[in-house]
Amino acid sequence: MKDRKPSRKPSSGFHRRDFLKGSSAAAAATALATAPAYAEEATAVSRLLGPGMTTITLSVNGKDRKVEVEPRMTLLEALRYGLDLTGAKPVSSEGSSGASTVLVDDKPISASTTLALDCIGKQIRTIESLDDNDPIIQAFVHQDGMQCGFCTPGFVVAVRAFLDKHPNATEEDIRAGLNGNICCCGTYADLIQAVLEAVKGGSRG
Image 1 (cartoon, rainbow, N blue to C red):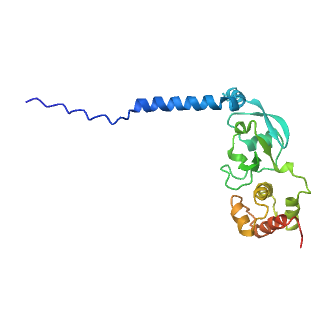
Image 2: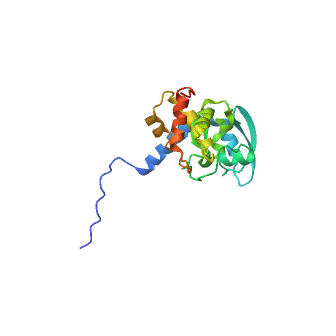
Image 3: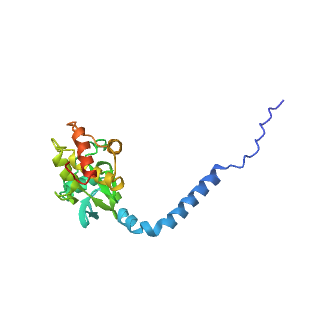
């Protein structure tokens, strides 16, 4: 007696090939829809395929700056070694310390974990964009919230971004909002007081 071939199960209506085709079509449609906005940036990035150095333009502290980068170079490396802006610090390569904090389109990001190429066409602000009379810097000095000072630029930039969104922040808000920055000297008490002083408009009592 011959073995009977198993009967085919009825189709569920789902076909992997059709799904992949549909996904590809959706991706293509999305690419076409967003093409005008990213055409210039995509053209710039397309020229960077390869291991060599290439010149790009970054908008840093209100000025267009040309800098040579490799495709793998981080924004922190471009700022420090290409543009001589050394405020952001290379403390942790994974960005856990917050010492490399800069603002990109007014949002705090870790420059040590962000590729320089990803910042083409965006507005970058570093600690160097603030002068000595900035109320946050003045508050840090008055409250002695620095000690070694290595983490201070990252804290100041993070505070600037935080207070722009939360001008009336409480101490609890500040502790939660700045938990991405680490001070190895442990001067958190003074740092909190500095931010509270800045919230009050730099008042010293």
